[in-house]
Amino acid sequence: MKNYAFIDWQNLNLWIRSQGFELDYRKLRLYLKNKYFVDTAFMFLGFVEGNQKLYTKLQKAGFILVFKPTIAYKRNGAEVVKGNVDAELVLRAAAREFANYDKAIIISWDGDFHCLIDFLIEKNKLLLLMTPNHKYSGLLKQFYGHILVITKTIINNIKLDK
Image (cartoon, rainbow, N blue to C red; front, side):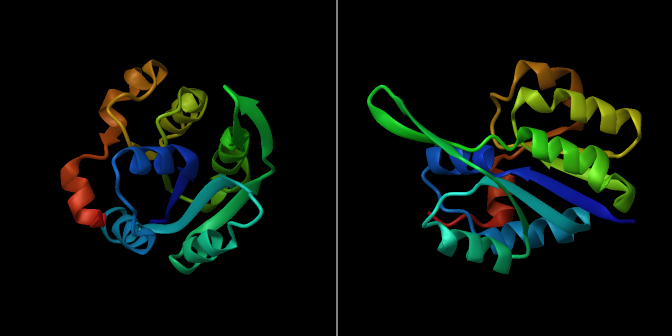
């Protein structure tokens, strides 16, 4: 059985940073491989000049990086960089890679993935929706039986380093 993971890096990264942790991405990749038999793991993120060290680290950990262009704008006087990966993640999971995997894990809390989750369930291809937060979108609540919230137990299995 071939399982793929499709990861919204921004959602995951925001949650990890809000908890004050640094994620060992190599261990996350091993966790996905060993626990859920994930052969291929795509990480979707906005491309920012100067982040090559991070990108190299993620690739060495075993993730396939899918970049989106970013835009910078001001919000409350501070510069915000935004790279919207949602469409690319949906396209990869529902079309480009669909025939290549048996089951998918989606890692995000974003309600924009509602249509993808619904589609994957309909096609019997959703293994799991992992959300890095109990406060995931209300649009995802109907998929409760497919959701695994990343808890402290899971964090300990992944071995986050503080």
